[in-house]
Each structure stands twice: as C-alpha cells, then as structure tokens.
Image 1 (cartoon, one colour):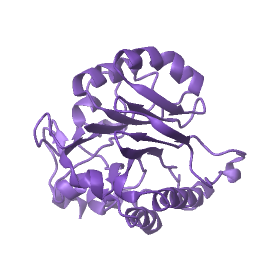
Image 2 (cartoon, one colour):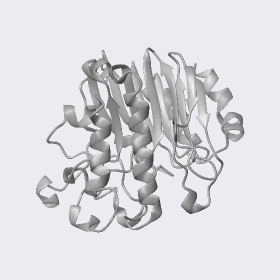
Image 3 (tube, one colour):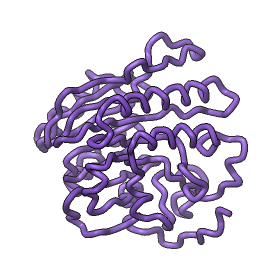
Image 4 (cartoon, rainbow, N blue to C red):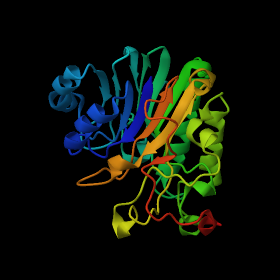
Length: 287
C-alpha cells in the first residue's frame, strides 16, 4: 500500500497537477491539506475525476481557508471530521473549529490528515491555540489504537534543527520553539514514529520551500510535512521519501508530497528526496 500526504495550497489551483500526480504515483491513500474549498466545491471539482481513478474521498472544508481531505482506493470507513474537544480560535473571533483534521479507516489503518495551525509568532494568541490544538490531536491518538494509526500532514513544526536549512533565521519565530517541539514529542509519545527520519536519520531532507527568493532552487527549505505511524504501519515500511518532482515546474504548491510505501516499494528503496537537489548545501550550514 502506498500512502502519501501533500499540502496542495489550494486544491482547485493545483487540480491540473494533482490528477496527473495521482496517475503517475498511484497512491492508495492520500492526505491533502490546505484545500481551501467548501465541501460542496470540493465535490464539484473532484468527485467525478477521483471516482474515475477508483478513489472515495472525505473532505472537511471551510471555503477560502484551511481544508483537509482523505482520498482512498482501499476503503474509507468511519469518517470523522475534526477532533474530539477540538479547540476554537476564539481570540480570532471564531465560534466553531477550523477545518484542520479528518479521519477514516483505510486499508485497516486509522488515518488522520492534519493541517496544524501555523502559530504566526510565539507572542500571538494563535500560538497558544496551536499548542491546544496539538494537545487535542494527541488525545485523539492516545484514546484510539496508536499501533494502527497514521497521522500525516502539514504539522507546521520542524522536529529538529536539522529539519531547517538555516536555524539562525528562525530565532524568535514559530516552527522551531521548544514548546512546539515538546507538543510534537508528546504526540510521538503515544507510540507514533516519524518514519521518514527513522529511515533517513542523517540525511538532508525538506518538504517545504518558500516561493520567495529562489528558495526551492537553492534547496533552502524545511521539513514540516510528516508521516507519523504506529508500530503496525511503521514496521511495514518498505520505502519513505519526499516527491520533490511534484514541487518543480509550473504553478506548484510550495510543499512536496511525502510518500510511504508499505510492504512493497514500487520504485525501490528510493529517497530521501526524489529527485535529489542539484546542488545541496552541506549539513554543516545549519550549525
């Protein structure tokens, strides 16, 4: 089984790229983030094309912002939109939770597609909301069956300093703070494993490159898109890699898909980034 996660940064804008990518990579389960569509608009844009490719889908959207989806051709059962006791960003004037999580059983795995709040800055109320939201996600996993769980998506946290191209540029910013990393560690503490870093412990690997300043072409990125798997799927890992090819070309998302192959690796044990950057900077540049 091939599982992938991709922050598409507007599903409708990325439709001309998403459908060919599904045809090329043939994932069995796909977690999407930042669809930026309502449920009705997602259905109108995608349902027919997905059905032609054998996918069922579950979408949790709110229009212009956020939005997550699950696509599956190995079953899509017991769909739950949102998190139990999900916090609301009331400081931002909201009365209901954002559309940031959707869960279903796919191929015997309990899969959650997540788009973790950004946090904006450590002083912003959105940062405290981010930590509360991560706590609710941890509770979802802990009260279920972590061994058969996969949480995949844009977590908006670089787990370590080796997951950013230049740590010094993030002083005073989110994504690298001790509290965020502690919240991620607590989520992993439920029994989940960061399967990409587990396979490639010492490799330079990013999943996000800002559109500005030629970051992608200089490989100045971050690893903030994660696949966190319980012991069942983690022990079945045959390959795990970042599909950098999907970040290239015309009108890409600023994120690349992360792909986890279970049991078999159709493309071989490739990675960690496919294709590799043409001129990566040395690891020492982060110290």
